[in-house]
Image 1: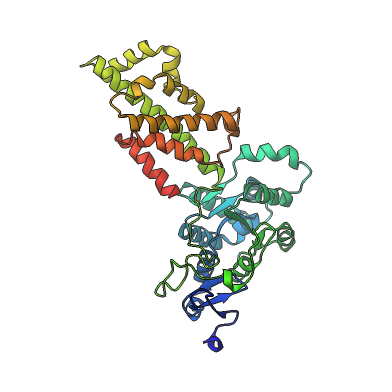
Image 2: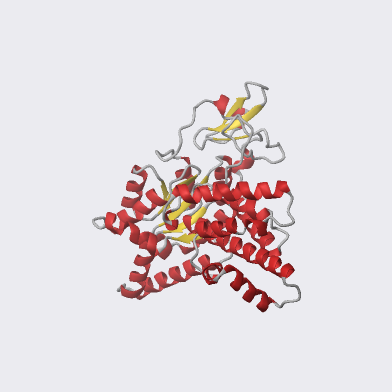
Amino acid sequence: MAANLPPGWKLAHSKKTGRPFYYNPKFKISVWEHPQYFERYEIDRKIKNTIVLRNENYNFCLDTNVLIHHLAFVDWVLDLCNELKRSYVNVPYKVWEELDNVHKYSNKEETRELARKAMKGVEKWMSLKDSKLFMESKSDFDKRKSDEKDLSNDEKIMNFCKVKLVSTRRKPFFITNDRNLRVRVIADGIKCCKPEFEDMLEAIAIKTDREPSTAEGVSRELPSSTSTISESLSDDAMEVTEYQPPDPRTALPREILEQYWDEGKRILIWILVEELKNFFSSAYPGRSDQQLIEIMKENLGHKKFNLLWGEHIRMIGILRLWHEYDEVIKLDKDNWTVNKYHENANRLLDFVQKTASVEDELDLDDQSWIDNLCGIAEVFKHHQAVDNFLKKIDAQFS
């Protein structure tokens, strides 16, 4: 069997069961089935399968030259991220500025046109539902300006990759055609490649300082027990323990976390308004919606009423309003449901109070707040709007 193996593969046996498997030390991947099936794939499919076998996800970061001259490759990387589910493509704001400058001021008409197409491409990809492309906001970029005033544009782009995209489960992966920049990025311990399939596959194999170390030896490199011969590829070829899928919420781009934080605030306000409307509807039967709103305004007072309809109320303010009208919210609910709501509401309030004094500075990467937010919403999922919100959360994070 070993004599017919493709280059780079080794035959090994499980020390516990004696079952044979195949291990590739370069890519740190293992499969149960003969690796000839793995090697038959086209290189783009091999890249995807290698990433899956390594149980990795990436925050890809694009350099300006890639967007200008290799837009088709960017399109492929976005398709790859859609298949991987938990990987994303990121555009530093400095790259966007450079694209704009090239589009406006390049001496070559052809280059100006390429930059224009790149900007339209970014705009199109960002507007897609469940887009996998995110651009650094200008506000985030401005926050770093004072610390980066003496840095070159390349260094600012590198800094975005090092500071914003490094996490425990989603590794930064820089793509650039600039040889000098590639060397500097790799020296900083970040995966980096040219916008080419072969180079990307090689870059996946290179261990960097930004990756956790793993013990060597085939005894710890068994394919996952969840994989079968018919599946060809194991789910997790690097661990002996039962496969545990990574938490998809970890280290999502801040833009996604802020989006769900804001939607969570809106859904909590919506629930509170609906519960108050139901309460006043029972107390004042036969009244129209407009009349009920006027009754609510009179009973709540202008300040609290305006808070509920305002756009800038903070989460802590919403939770305090929930606490104030606790008796209304608890109506017609059993003790178990009330306790579940209180437990999650108190934990969410504790998160808000402990993590930051300013909401914009909340540590949203500590995503216990998602569980607590959903725990509150679950109590009210008989409302269609709440049920839709929970399904949207589940689609992103499950």
